[in-house]
Amino acid sequence: MSTPDVMNKIVSLCKRRGFIFQSSEIYGGLKSAYDYGPLGAELKRNIAQEWWRAMVHEREDIVGIDASILMHPNVWKASGHLAGFSDPLVDCRNCKERFRADKAPKATPGTPTKYHKGGRTSEPEISGVVGAVGYICPTCGSSDLSDERQFNLMFRTSIGPIDPIEAVLDQIQGKQLTRAELREKLDLAVKETAIYLRPETAQAMFVQFNNVMQSVSPKVPFGIAQIGKSFRNEIVTEKFIFRTCEFEQMEMEFFCEPGTHEEWLSHWTAERVKWWKRYLNNGERIRLRQHGKDELAHYASNCYDVEYEYPWGWDELEGIASRTDYDLKKHSEESGTKISYFDQQSNDPATGKPGWRYVPFVIEPAAGLTRAVLAYLVDAYTEETGVDAEGGEKTRVLLKLHPRLAPYKAAVLPLMKKDGMPEAARSLVKEFLHSGINARYDEQQSIGKRYARHDEVGTPYCITVDHQSVEDKTVTIRDRDTTRQERIKIEEAVAVVRGKLAEA
Ligand code: ATP
Image (cartoon, rainbow, N blue to C red; front, top):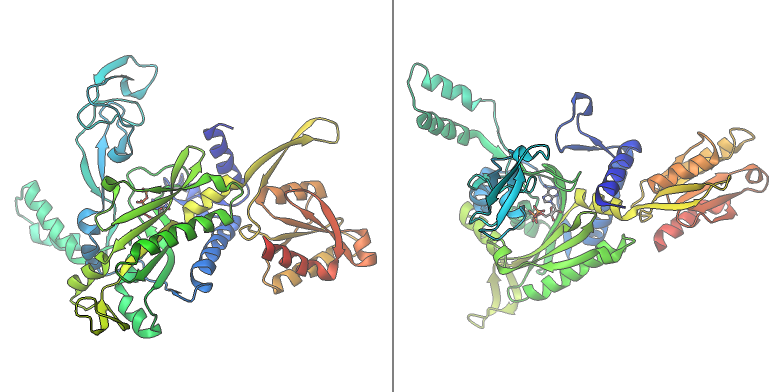
């Protein structure tokens, strides 16, 4: 299948089966904002739950927090986001596309270019030359480009009941101001009430370091984890939910002794790759890529990306950065609050005396939850060709989602809507739900259509209540991937599914 084909099919399945909808669709939609429907909400929640289980519950050395999206503006001053969280923005003078210079196709300066006027193939061709910047327009291939300008990615809003613009209007009434003077007044007024939607979840873990230390007394090395929404005013939103302005992250800041950070970076890169692969059918579609020196963020001494091979090629899923002691030191300086760790067991390397106070180094595995939803959907989407009852070719579409990620773990299907079958099926669903396993009752249409429907949303097990069930208290359980069925005792159905989920 070609790239647009696969993506189109996944986008269409997501809408049709209630995974992901365009935001505000009845109003024409909001560009690149998405809503997770009944199935998508379950899938996203299951991924988050698996991450939390692996990163927080199963480790004694990591605790979780849930911080607010709005933070004091000085957080972003200290972290460097206010001054430097920007992308180089370029306009194509030919087709009017706006794009990121760092993501544009590279071309050697001086190379001749040919592109169509306005980017339309029906228009005449224009000749140009690649400029010193060394890239061309990603949409029309033109080399006729504007200069780069830096564009801050943080969403700014204001807090409090006072409208800053209203105050400026009062000030300037009757005055003749130049554009620059007016701009200055507006900037000043807006700045006083400005507040930002967080562009990453990480900063809360640094800012709350002291409170976590004082409340639960962890010993270095330890981590603080968080899952939550982040916002970036992305210049180019793209590829369905891959890059959106509102998204979710799963981040963990691991605080360690200076000098042990490279060791911990190796530990975390290995752990995270193992975690991603655990839920994939095609583990070879995950790789680690080390950042080149010129790619490293200002705070990082080393960094790896966990990349997934999406239908358009390798692209980022998670960044694992060695952030040194940069963030804790910056917040300490900016806030005037001492942020450090006292290790009673070690000797201070500078003096050789017992007790060592230091600022911990940080390893940060930062994954995208909404990007994970896309990667797991891409990995799971499968078409199988078979033969129908009349001997014709038929295609079975299934989502081979890992059973722990699947929205419904089991569908319980009465073969017919009579003879006690619906009652037995409903009572089994209740049992599943009481045991914390998400199961669904489904009696609409033929049994074949119901199997197909559940294959398409990734339900790993279909349990059918038939005539025999009523007589001997047994049901059939069908495996989504093999379509094989076996007969089990109805009273054992919950335990069987629980066992399969535990083994998966
Ligand atoms: P990219 O290079 O793709 O812009 P990034 O390096 O800026 O990503 P980080 O700041 O390292 O991303 O954020 C950690 C993770 O958060 C990314 O690996 C990605 O999974 C996710 N993420 C970042 N920006 C977005 C976005 N706009 N939409 C969806 N997920 C995102």
